[in-house]
Image (cartoon, rainbow, N blue to C red; front, side, top):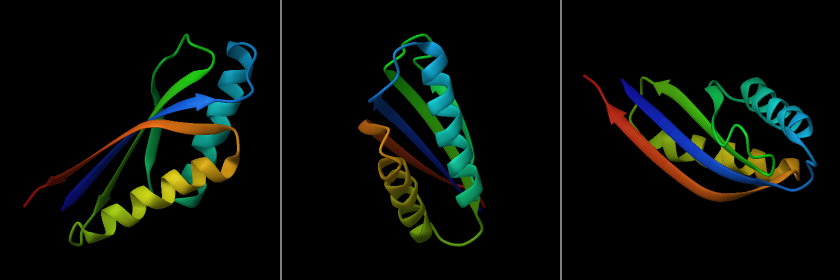
Length: 97
C-alpha cells in the first residue's frame, strides 16, 4: 500500500473577506473531491483571507508511479479553476507493506 500526501499553499485572487475566502476554498475542495479519489481539507491560514493551505491524501495499492500523476492532476485542477495560484507545494509518499 502506498499513501500520498500533498500540501498546497495558495494565494487567492479575489476574496475581500473571510466569508468569500471560505466559499472559494469550499468550492475548490468540493471540486477536487468530485474529480479525484482523495481526502482533502483546509489545513492552514484559517484566518488569513488571501492565503489558504490545502492538504490532500490518497491511497493506492499499486506502485508509487501513479502518485506523481495524481499530484499533477490535482495541481492542474486548482490552477484551472482560475481563483488561485500555487505558492508552495510539498509531496510525500509513504510506503507500507
